[in-house]
Length: 237
Image 1: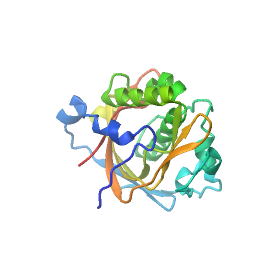
Image 2: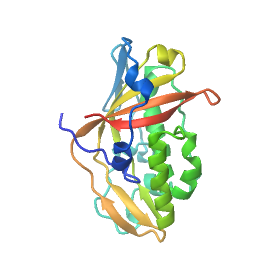
Image 3: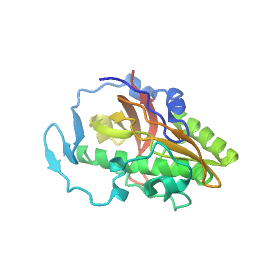
Image 4: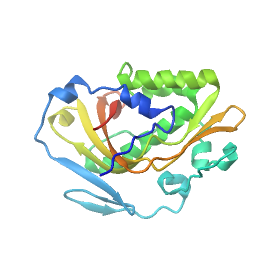
């Protein structure tokens, strides 16, 4: 597999990822529990034990991975609505519950959609960041700094952190005890991102990079909401 840098697509994710380190629990605990893999192939999710086929979507607005994103754009009018509709929109309410392997694809998609909104609305995103990222984590601090810079400079970044291709999770005793859940995502970076100013002018188009890379996510359980929230994200070498 050829490895490509995962751009943060919004607010320079590559920089934030580089500053993130594994949690002590993530590096010091081991488990022999099986890992279940869900693979995206033509809208079909397969796992090591079951296979389910989803009906194809008829609206590209609900399928951001099926849109052709332009490599040239002058204003927000040139950018797909799946990104521009997020500007000044209310904060999404992603479903971050995980009961088993079948929920992983949905968790990643919904978290990425929420994270895209955060960066399209940096001023509001600063206050909302703790809703789906563990405060005081290295990832949180890096993203917070990037959002503050975007707010102060009057810019928005429209795009997605990465395009998930395959998602796997380790469902072991730590998951059963509602402590932590480790995800591994094979991701591609074939979607450009756009930096826009307050007038809606596209300042920069960050082109996509070829290839795939592997991203590891560490999730912590938040009892009050019954949801799994991102603590750490890193690119595996």
